Each structure stands twice: as structure tokens, then as C-alpha cells.
Length: 85
Image: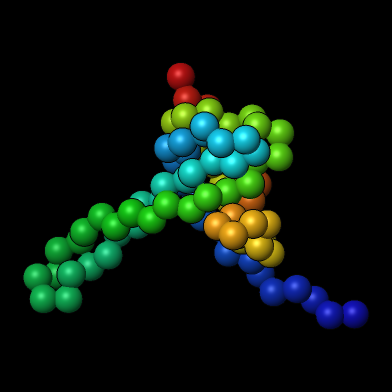
């Protein structure tokens, strides 16, 4: 029996929940500039599958990589870390 590799996990903030069973999650990371050695914020957004439509705008969530669910969805919601007020 083969073991699956570890799937990528990232934490981010929900920036859109207008789709059915989908949310857009924005992930921030710090990258060091090669020349000036200053840290810069870089943002990436991922479309994640939310089966129960339980996420709201502003929630902090943990998403994991999965097999492609649709053309743009390759991530799914694992859990909600912090609810928006």
C-alpha cells in the first residue's frame, strides 16, 4: 500500500464568499528583497472548495491542497481558525 505525500497547507483570510460552495482565500507571505534585504509582503489568492458554505468574509481559514475539483479549484477548506466579527 502506497502512502500519500504530505499535502500543502496554508492559512489565509477569506476575501470573497459570493460563490456557491467556493471561497477566495488570500495568503500573505514575507519575502526578502535580494538587493536591499528588506522584507516585502507578497499576496496570493486561491479558490478553495467550501462544501457546507460555512465561511464568511474575513474568516481566517486553513486550506489544504487536493486533486482538481474544477478548472480553478485545487484547494479545499480544512478548518476555520478564527471567525470574523
